[in-house]
Length: 64
Image (cartoon, rainbow, N blue to C red; front, side, top):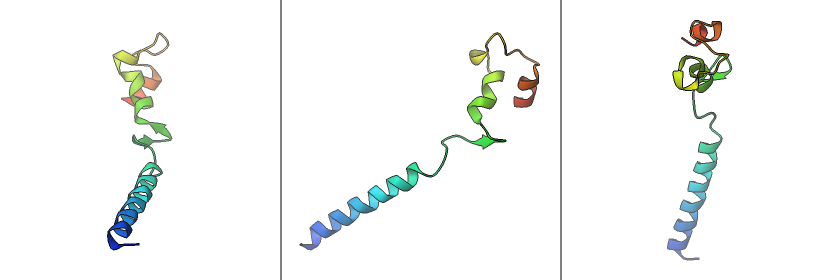
């Protein structure tokens, strides 16, 4: 095996290992008290409001 081929194979293996470590590194968004950022913001953002979620509700106050 020539030197150039060994370098290419080594780089491919290192990049595959790096990709696996990056994928397994954890959640993509912050988690606080077991809830993701999205779940905290949904009650307080008008775009996500549903009829059962209103301003000044306990969930909205906690997210605020």
